[in-house]
View (spheres, rainbow, N blue to C red):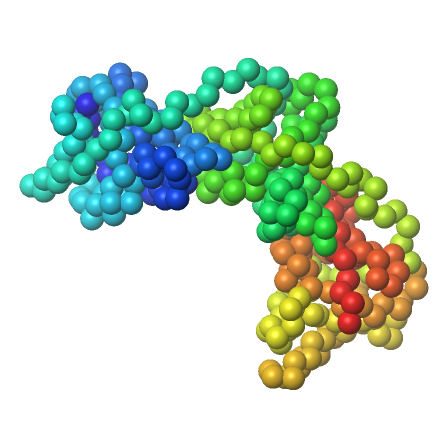
Length: 376
């Protein structure tokens, strides 16, 4: 194998894949990146026991030659030292291998050699039998994942809750995440959806999706097999196992009847809750208290014996129902829910004492957050 490539492009992709490579796997070779050169360009692959990502670097990008392949071949190189070395080399590099599987890297007058591993021993990516497939714009998929992934469970007690449930309906993709204390649900329009089906995707795999450097206008092809999901763009393929198990029926969790609804400025509320969290650190659940006063003002308060207290008043744009809210919530949960809202105004609906509150962008029911209050 022998090829020449622009190092700025190459090192960026190697750094991206290094974050995926496993350092704790029973297969030591998974701490490496597989490099394959052929007549069409260079393919880099990195992965762990749950997810693999394959990145293709074509010979030309936007009409500019970025790779010149002189001899086809493949090798696996340990990602950590490879990444650190590439960052310290000038722009263009030449990478080649010999019969001893060592990797020779030339950059100007600099010559380095790293020990390599046989690409034959690297796990082969599966050939899957596709059961369902859809297409979606990368920016839309990225956004719907960002709006839900933070609500997955951090505990392995219920493995199915550590993933995001993806429901595919006619021309619609719905993402749902819950840890039993909060729930996040977001939906987007898609094309080519065939019937209704659902899968649970590990949150770790979807985090790798968020890290991919793709054009916002790129099209993502989502393919579903019996135990795997494949997300592919023009030059990237992400393979992930699915989580087996019965995901809870979340439709019945979102209430339709409310005692009180209040609407206010999203950015102002985010800033207010964020300030209150400074004083809530000593509480296990970052207690932030919300109350409606004078029928039109939201009071945000937090008291800390060791730090101090904060009290902030924000004017409500609208109040419907009984203006008598006096409840405590996890401030960090509240912040994470609010930060996914792009609209100027947010509506928070209350169902009664110790019942979950529903957070939605004003006039947009496609994005819903459900947060349980705290007992104080």
